[in-house]
Image 1 (tube, rainbow, N blue to C red):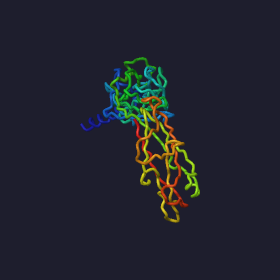
Image 2 (tube, rainbow, N blue to C red; image 1 turned 90 degrees about the vertical axis):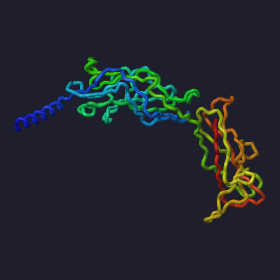
Image 3 (spheres, one colour; image 1 turned 135 degrees about the horizontal axis):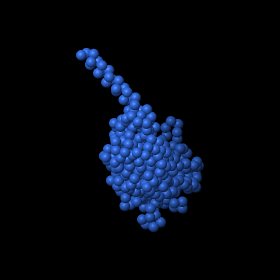
Image 4 (cartoon, one colour; image 1 turned 135 degrees about the vertical axis):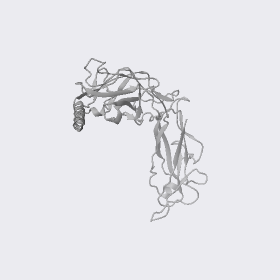
Length: 358
């Protein structure tokens, strides 16, 4: 009795080893068309402002999606191998990024890429950039364990290209049109027997994703330092200093007007001039009797006070026209403030430009 049990156990081990040695191909369980399903947690997509993207840039985290029905693979004896091949359909193809096909969305200049992968993420197969032909997208010879009895999932990445011209005013969600993405097969696609070697079609539906959009607004820049020059006290006393031009620049999206105000914790009592923040410490002598006047135009003699009403940085030629490229000049001048005499020393102050937009 003991011998009989031992022989059975030995035979079982031998069969197990022989079965694994004969694994030479993997395949999907069926040919059913697949629909990519909406992700459970919808990410919010925020495009970058128009003009800030010169080469494609990813604007989303990786988004995990599922298919219906579920796509499952298994491995058994055969001679077609375990490599993954895909063919991309031309219907929704937009181009390519990093050797991955990109597909159109409802917003020009925003595209997405798609990959298929099994449980465990042992292989990742991105749909290839060239349509109409089978391409090996995930080499996997002799690693059946990565594919055997696995459920496959979808990975999506969203990119912005230099073709982006803003989010239309009536669009609040990023979506994809319904249509075919392509096909996927495990093993040599030259085998014409689709029942023996399934190659399901992968499709996007109008319900595959509908992601909320955060509209980009403005990205504006101003210099951190404006050099007002070196002046003799008499030149400041007599108003013979020069105006120094500086710029507020940037880009905006879905914006019809941009305004600014000035603020500072160091101003004269009437808030027309910005006073010295330098203190007489550590061998540094602070200039006295001086401040900075900021004006809205080169020939303007009236200062822009702190905490005043909003002034225009940019506005459309016609009310309601979009504003996209910002390049606004302002001028700063070192001036005498009050009745105290101007004294030699170092001058510096801090002014914040606060912007609002419509």
